[in-house]
Length: 246
Figure 1 (cartoon, one colour):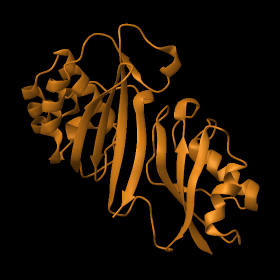
Figure 2: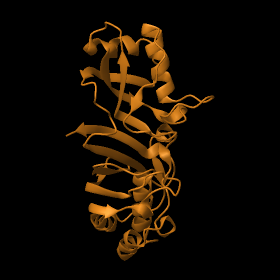
Figure 3: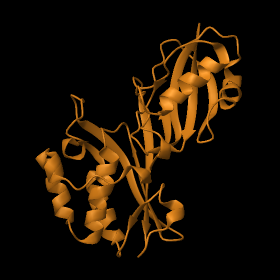
């Protein structure tokens, strides 16, 4: 028996998130079915990040144990034959038997993409949040600085979270203006609560619109109350870029 680690990219548009569900397509279910096609083994992969419906990834991580004799580095080729076009294993490797993708020290990087123009662009409707009206990026960057560091982010997570500890460390938040009216919010941290990055993005957009002040963001952190923070940005703008294991 050996443990295989997969680095997985996917377009989450047509999936009900990562975690397996009885009657809906999910990323985990597609991976399980591909492994069964390759080896005949019925199993469940364990993912590092249980992304929501409509959220994308360039570098999510999953592991599974197998008795198959396929070399570790060949699993990506074997699985990609049976995966749909919107899911692709980018890398496969053998790891120690005790490696668990959610129980290790990591740095995770997410990007949230905004299309800031008067009218929506149908071509990128599944990959960006359309915001009409000018956004003040300087105000957004100043507000983002308040969120960098180790804080209790209880105000910035879904009320349905099961996390007992809501303290997380955000290493950086960068807001970049790209060509063609694209704004990217890149957030890097040691871990994120349920909907945390989307709530950060929604809050910063409200600051950019002038609906919230920089001082408001300080009060949000101190309040430790979800109702005090900004809106939850829609899922399609969010991509899990990578997970770095320390």
